[in-house]
Amino acid sequence: QLQLVQSGGGFVQAGDSLRLSCAASGRTFSTYAMAWFRQAPGKERAFVAAITGSGDFTIHADSVKGRITISRDNAKNTVYLQMNSLKPEDTAVYYCALRNGMVTRADSAYTYWGQGTQVTVSS
Image 1 (tube, rainbow, N blue to C red):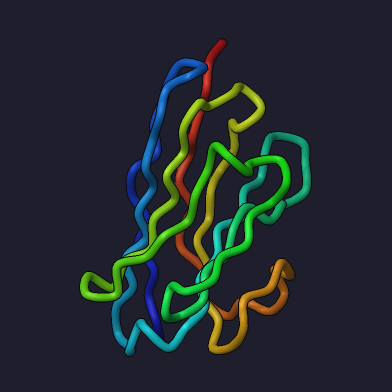
Image 2 (cartoon, one colour):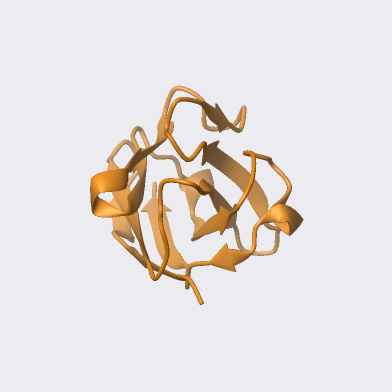
């Protein structure tokens, strides 16, 4: 089984930055699309961003464009979520996910999931 291990969450103030990491093990990393989702308290899980296996194409939710960016380093088998200018509404549990296929916003398409990491943004 593929394993995705997340790190980098924490407690920050509005306007601060964080970078989340998601490290994959057990399989060849560069052939898989990766994505980030988040689930805020009392809300459904929402798409944040996704990236192709090669890293040549990304998509981002409208709510995070210009502030939050997905990237990957295939030499390290790691995908990142750089979060700048954080807002209280960014508070959520963030999950990374992997699929053997094209990038998509649909969470049902992703086969493997990280354990989740909490991001809390105070005003």
